[in-house]
Picture 1 (cartoon, rainbow, N blue to C red):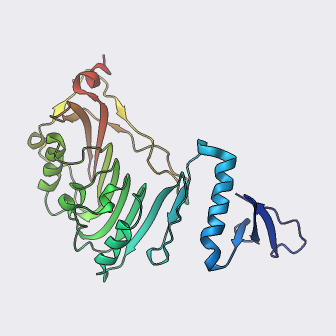
Picture 2 (spheres, one colour; picture 1 turned 45 degrees about the horizontal axis):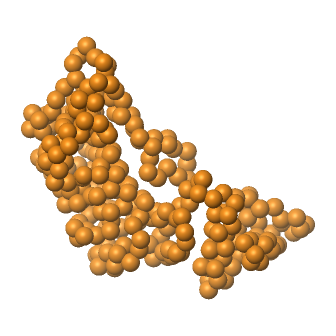
Length: 284
């Protein structure tokens, strides 16, 4: 939201009535927007006033995201109709997992967590709120990535993993088979695994995951969903990457179908809200 400073001095502090409370603002010439001007001890009051103003004006017709970019400066306001998102960067020498776990456990469930780490030396505890986030993005471009402990505990809907390499393709086979049996990833809608080095296509034996195939005479449907979290500092597609594949697997517990697409260094896994019978009817 932009605010106009009507005073001659564009950088002077001006005041607006926000939800019945006077709030100070100051224009930022570089970004061409109004920046809230407040003392640290007034932060929660100021942010609450602005949020309540937007809530009164727009109601629940728009989504409200609170994004934290720096873990050491985190502040999570207690506000209604607010989704929490956080970017976490772990340096190579990061060791304070206990503090990170304590921060996550003291927070509400996150809508989105972005985690970039030079090296993930250990995984979160199985009960960690990290795994309860609706959507996660993990980037680790050095060394091998611990697939099973990270993904098998994930209870959210969408996940993107970008890593240097995996230790063995058996990790992916185990992951898919645990999804099929209903042991893991029960709420998963979309998964993208992207490798920096290895090529996937020569490592996966699709027979080991019980893959099924759509008839070559039929056109396979395309899987795509709205992203759980689609706000970024740069333009981005609002939907997950489209998955058009003749290969699919079926979950035993509810006969739900998931399309699998393997492209060199990337694996896509898209779960349909359809049984196998309903899925095949899409191509009739």
